[in-house]
Image 1 (cartoon, rainbow over the protein chains, first blue to last red):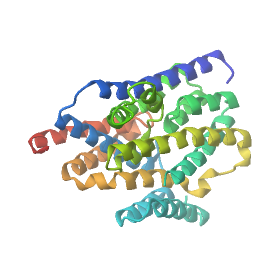
Image 2: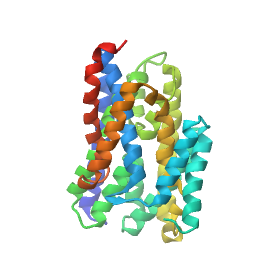
Image 3: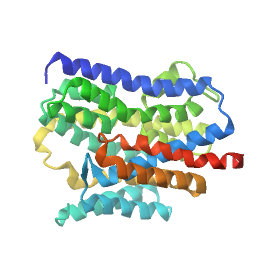
Image 4: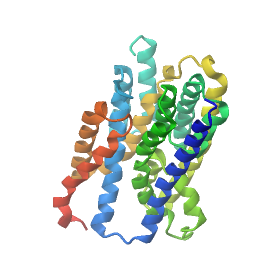
Length: 106
Length: 217
């Protein structure tokens, strides 16, 4: 992987990623949003985050993840539902998945 | 609280480092990606495409597609980065922009006031900017010594934490409706899209909120 093209790719990738982030931040600082637009942006962030939760729970790339991860997320979600502190959410999720894997469930 | 997020990020970073290292990337390359791109899923995809023999161009395009959700997150972060006592529309928000990611924005969203949002964002974001590259470097150094980082189950912790952070926002019916439709769309389209890009398609579900326009405020 020591070819120049990989390094160029890394640099372009980094610049592009930063450009995406900073253009969002700067745009927001310059544009006055209506209250509906503001609300819509808040909702869009929630939509994105929940979609990330759903896809990263169910898939590894294009493959469906094993039940161990899904049940772990469900365990963490149940803790969150009952307003458990985030520490417990992490322990429940990771712990459930780790125990399932230890007992042979992938 | 954010400390736990840093820890999970570091451990996922280890598995990224191991993957990148065993795919033939040098320590410099995998660390440069970790520091400069600072976006877990996009980096996994980037190295995956190159390791599979794809071109650097294809890897960059796919990685940027994943990271384009950071544009929306950036707009959200702009609401607290550029306001208040510090009024940091200058270099501070330029630096802050690099820290925009799933976790830092979710942590900020869970706070009420602008001051607390900003504090939570910086605290979580800086920690991730440090723990992700450290994890990646460790993974690259240890290589195959770490046989299976998955045994710790932290791949389940990441979605669970984000879920816990968005849960309060889902109390609002319209948001819940849009988010559920979006998640369903993302899951249904995932098998047919480049890995990690399905959440962008989920954004279409925001259209269902338009009929509720009048009810705002």
